Length: 532
Image 1 (spheres, rainbow, N blue to C red):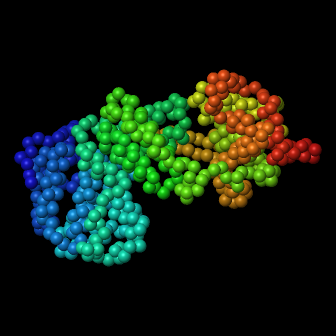
Image 2 (image 1 turned 180 degrees about the vertical axis):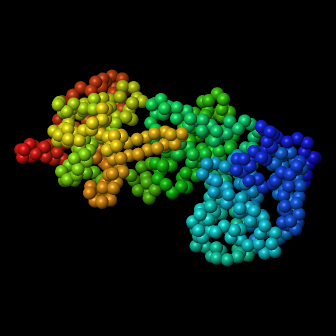
Image 3 (image 1 turned 60 degrees about the vertical axis):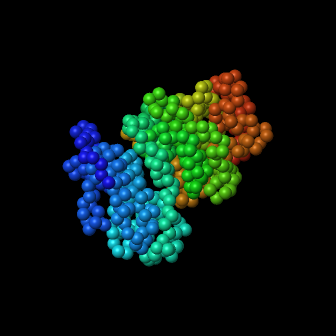
């Protein structure tokens, strides 16, 4: 049960290994006293047993194993004991995982509840008639049920099961063959495979993900990457880190990891696009880590390009095919109503978005130097294309109603066409100490107007889709859909042989006029001129 007397302990900066774990907020199963580990054993009338191993990660693991062996020897057969013998070792391994690798961000509450559950279970097992293990957690509350689902002791089918209502006998105990699921199955598998490998803490998944995000943050600071892109990447990698384990060594990443993560995502009740984005973010980070000379991920997993690990992104979580809904496209009557019944600024937003295929971010980034109200022209490059070589510069002909509205609402700001009442941009994306702060003035206001029935109950971005779809399904102008959207070229000719000078294009002007005529915006301006 005990080894030779520990003569040495692992110290760093003058602190013992156990003290460093406490500083990190990790509650150890065993306590350190003088030169040994100790634990009060309820099965021995509360006596304290000592385990002589050194104060280090390896010594603590050996002491834990000796403690678990002693508990198994002292545990008599009691009601529900089969479930305890099945569940407690796994719960202790979960506790051990936290002790070894630390508490990932967002799992502090889960960690605390796990500690309380293990302590309560050990004391209950010492009683003559132990209760069911789930009775230590208030599973009838949302928090309690969520915790039990996180550790795998609870499922939606069990909520209505009769065993929740009272004490369980040995034969009816549902946890006698329980196995952890989800992230804990992977974490315990890593422990069993020896993922407690000695090594530098800089080789852990959590450290390298933070390093990767720091690199992306530097790109944001250099205006090489959008803040919103960084924010979504951070959120998706945080999910992978919590599932895989922040403290796991990077060399444990292999094809099995990707397949297990893929199966985990398949089981989630979210859309397939969300699943694909989460999966692709993990692959992006793995590929980056593999390219770093100082990261001990020497082999790129073979499953990185496995065609089987795909998601049906054209199918939503209800099993239906997703497509641009024609019901959400704006009708001419709705466009006319908005451009005549809304405040001037919103009339201008609607007309400009349909005229030039704009979204909220395009409105926010539109600069005065890009418009010529005298000539009725707007020369624009989309923000998303700035990282591409020779992005398309499109010269839009502005309808007379659009020009008139712009003259009315153009701001006094020296740079931007539209700003808020406080002189700020309509949309802000900032990175402050690793945290993304985003504010969309147009999007928030549009949502409020939809709820108050001031505008049609349709997304604002469908103004852009409305113009695009109208061009697409008119054979005469279908080839101009990509020009209207100002998207990056996809063909070899478009990438390498076409010049995008931003000069007016007569055929494209005809298409814009036809679009305005169909939605009644040219007629609006003519009637206003006649009335004047």
